[in-house]
Every structure is written in C-alpha cells, then in structure tokens.
Image 1: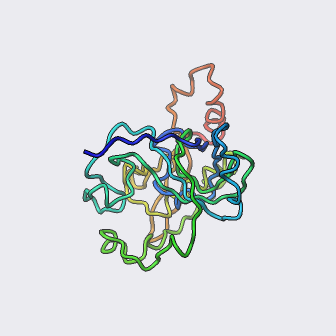
Image 2: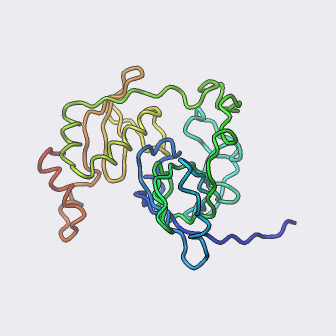
Image 3: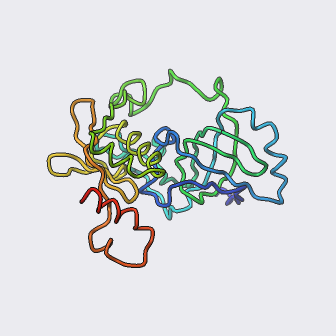
Length: 261
C-alpha cells in the first residue's frame, strides 16, 4: 500500500467561470479568456517566480476542487458516444483530481501572475507552475490513441467556421463591455463542433440548435462546416426576471425589453 501524500496549494486562480458547466473543456477552447493567479504570501514565492517573466507560456498544475469522486470510464466530447478509460482522456474525474493546463503568461507582478486562455474554475487551488518549453513539451507527430480514427492523426480536427446573423451581431454589440467574453466563448465552443453534448451544453432546439453559455442562450444552425449564430436570448424565465431586488438581472431585463424573448 502506497503512503498518502500531502499537497499544499501555492495559490489560487481567479477566472470568469463560477461553475463546472460554464468552464471550457480545454485551454484551447478558452482563447482570450483572462485570469489571475494569486500566489500565497509568506512562503518566499516572490523569489520562486524570479525569471518567470521570460516565458510566453506556463504549465499550471491545479486541483479540481469541486470534484467529489472519480469515474473509471467517462464520455469525452469526441468519443463518438463511447465511454473511454479515464486515464486515456483529459477528463477532470480522475483518481486524484489533478489538472494540467498550458496558459499564456502576460505579466508577473510580484505574487500575481496575469494569464490568458484559462479553463479553470474561479478559486481553483494551484499546486505548481512550470515553464512551457517548446522543444521538450511539444511532439506534433505523436499518436493520438482512440482519437486518431475519429478525427485523424492531427487533433483538433479542422474547426468549423462561425458566422453571425445581423440580428445576433446587433444583440452581442448591445451587451457592450460584456460582449467580448461572451462572443469568445460562443465562437470557441462552436468552432469545435456543433454536435449535441452535455459537457458543452448543446442540445437540439426545434429545427436548429441551442448553446448555453453561462446565463445566456445562443440559437444557431449548421450548414456543412459552417455554424451560423442566429440569435442570443436570456437564460432566465419570465417569472425569474419579474422577481424584484436582484440588480444582477437588470441587464437581462433590459435585453428582453429591447429584443424580446
């Protein structure tokens, strides 16, 4: 029997994602999304980050703190409906809930690291940080296991083109400062493929499809390798928007007043 190990986080990461359903499945699907790693004071970590600013990308080793168990077989988004052994996947439901992501390092400010392309939940404990070394960490010709017969030797498969209808573009522009993150999430998710899957919150919607992004709903249709975003809608029901005293719903109320449901 192997002994138990004790792991102490060196900090946490702050991100826009407050729940597991809203977080992207890979850092590659979080292009442009910003986060901040806050390292713990009083542990000499301000010296540990010396020279880190010279690297463009870093590995972040973290703890899936919202997981309560693990599954020996899981259903990845690209598994063609077949369950796979968890150790042959990037699923968060692991025997030890340890995650590994490459993020872009934008700045080092003392015990604060500004990063981009984050796919972790807000408040995720950070266990370690290592520099990304291209010649040592990238093997572009490596085999891709069970993915290879599904998407070819190169992963990911060619992305879908994402286009916006005039109405959807008008709606997104109306959102103002909130637009950039929402648009980035919509485009990065749909570029991976429009197939219905619970992990990416996509489901059929009449003759089209519906994507859930946080508390917004996105109606879209598919034409070959082209995905057209037709409209954006609030994710709140009418009776929820009528509930007084919640200012966080003001933007949704104004959105419905402007564009309807």
